[in-house]
Amino acid sequence: MGWTKSKKSSFKAGDRVTVPGGYGDGTITEFEDGCGGGELASVKLDSGRQEWVGVSRLKAAGPKKSTDKKADDYELYVRDVIRTSDGRLGLIKDFTYGGCSDQYAVVMFHDGQTREYNVSRVTLVAAATR
Image 1 (tube, rainbow, N blue to C red):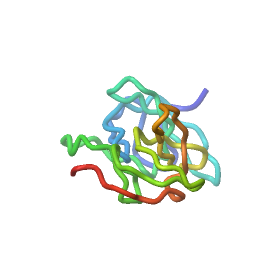
Image 2 (cartoon, rainbow, N blue to C red):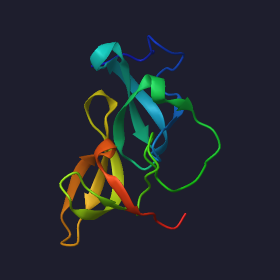
Image 3 (tube, one colour):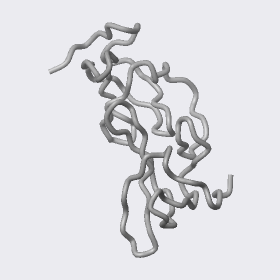
């Protein structure tokens, strides 16, 4: 079980925050130590999902912005067509986080199969209408 007050920021459990990457707003439920000396916050998103997010990435919730989900540090959006690191073409359906805040694109292929790829290892082929 984690704790309710951040050791590395002014956030505390119950605070409304914005999670980067198009995840939207949510409410912090608890904190835990992350890898590499970082701190993670468990955030219950308004969409109903629960996500662990690095505290340094969180922002106090503000007015709602674009509804298009976007990769944090790359110009990739949901509905973009990409080429994966193993040469396959696919469509980005969502973004998720792995260990140490690595971000992954959930990619759907023509046969309906989905797989996660690190966003740093995919190449944009065709951008969705912005």
